[in-house]
Length: 304
Image (tube, rainbow, N blue to C red):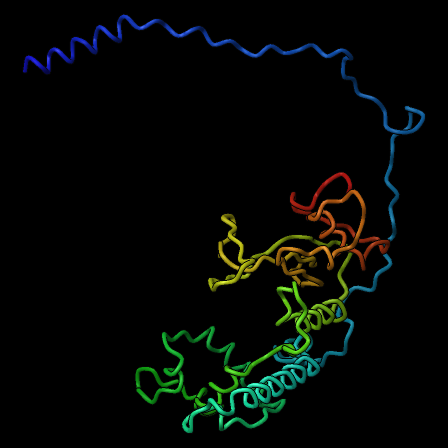
């Protein structure tokens, strides 16, 4: 106890004998040499500046033929056209052929790759439909979609395609020719597919006068070098895209962020990369009287 009281006494005297801190000095405001005043905009100083209003000359709406009683599948096929499906069929068959020729000596007798036959347009459509349905009907393992168990049974998968055939298509599914790989392009595997979808977005629907430029995040928690973390987004982790769309949410064009994007953007001196992104997305619509009603702070500046 004596040692405890001795320590408390020493601490008390140390606090009492400590020199006080100097008073906090407030920062002085330096007076301006020239007082700030409101001035009239204009060359002569009297007339206000009015921006030039460009009349809207676009033809908004759907630019392709759509049936009167169009179904959701018809609208989906406007963007996922037959040309895109045929491209996927061609590249999938090419990669399967390259794989079997390269690994012919290493394949075992029981390998499922030995049963490969070239896929077709209809089979690719059925395969993509099953893949999208898997995002709605969640199961922990892939083979459970073809299970006969009463608790796990989902007949549409088994009736549409055999399990082993779906595994083969999933193994050899490809969007580009590996022989034409370009160094430094992180989106080489999907570059042609993305360009085709962007072209469909630009040609299917022409926007109204009011447009929006914004960034979005596609949820993806896999591993790749340009995955982004955005705290303000609901998904937080995923692929960041810059997009221009109508006020109703119809996307007219988009750019996937993957790091070095100088080759994809317009080359204008004096603009930052984020400013060049906005100009690149809006370039087809400049001079037609469109109004950008939403421009995120990331893209907005006096130069833009």
